[in-house]
Image 1 (cartoon, helix red, strand yellow):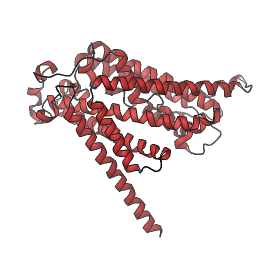
Image 2 (image 1 turned 180 degrees about the vertical axis):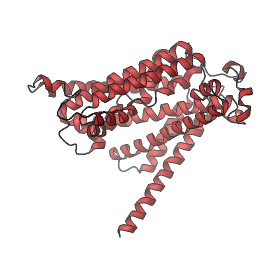
Image 3 (image 1 turned 90 degrees about the horizontal axis):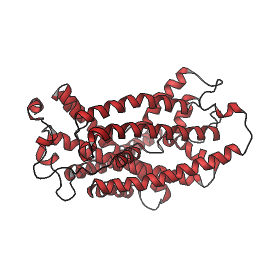
Amino acid sequence: MIFNLSEKMTSPTATAPAAVHLRRTLTLSEMILYGVIVIQPVAPMSIFGVLSDRGRGHVVTAILIAMVAMLFTAISYGRMARAYPSAGSAFTYVAREINPAMGYVTGWSMVMDYLLNPLICAVWCAGQAAQFAPAIPTWAWKILFVALFTLLNLRGIKTSARINTGMAIAMGMVVVAIFVAGARFILGVPHDPQYFTRPFYDPRTFTFDGLLGCTSIAVLTYIGFDGISTLSEEAENPRRNILLATVITCLVIGILSAGEAYVAQLIWPASQPFPDVNTAYAYVAGRAWKLLFPIVGFTLLLANFGSGLGAQIGAARLLYGMGRSNALPKSFFGAVSPEHRIPQNNVILVGVVAIMGAFVLELIAGYRNYVGAVRSG
């Protein structure tokens, strides 16, 4: 099947099903919101403690350096989308420019990434939700979140876009609250001028090894922007807007993340250890305003929900691009729902994989705990 790809991969218009196509309705702003939600506007909050420890307080500088590097990748994706405005994303780019077999390998590599994201987000959301409502078992939360991912995405791309807008507004309000509370906390006490530049450079703790190690982790802040390219066949003017949306998304996330890290480092200096590095930002926000501690926890739940929702969209579109090009069975993966104009089969398949994977991870974790208890006993 791989070796026939070169013969079968023609233009998206020629190979798409004659009766039903994906609907080109996404505007530039909607694609930017999609990218921001998939990456998460509160992306550095989840890993802030780890970044601070690794970089010895130079989180802001690491995020900005990572942004420059990721912008080159974003521009590359945008330029390839201009040449090949296909839902297949990197699968199509590699298959057309290098080799169909290499495109097949690239496509499956991306599929694995996109399939894991909804799974991980469902597990994380279930664990966080169980803390808010411990009476409901974690397995029930997993089913609920995967079901929500799937049902909302089955409603069509415009429904997903409206949900992204709502989540972006909600998370934006929380970020503004953190900035306001942080400013009141910081400006409430006199500081020397160097205090405000230490998040960028602190001569007492700076090392190149620490900064570079922190930067290698900080790139995780931007993971997911490539998903915008999977919307090429649902975007208005994809040859222009995919490039703009990808680059603007990287810039928005980079500047926003740097601002969130800057405020956090001023509130909680790197010299002070965190009670828990995994939830460090919640403690930072709680120091600025006690009410923000649970709010940040809920916001991270909302952010991971949005990321899982968006990743399922990307996975479904990528599988569609591979199916339409006959890299996967076209009758299943290349089919489009006539009602909502989405690759419905793929959305459902990703949901099934996510829920099965979530329970497999739980079984593995339970087995490891059992073995550990037996050995220690």
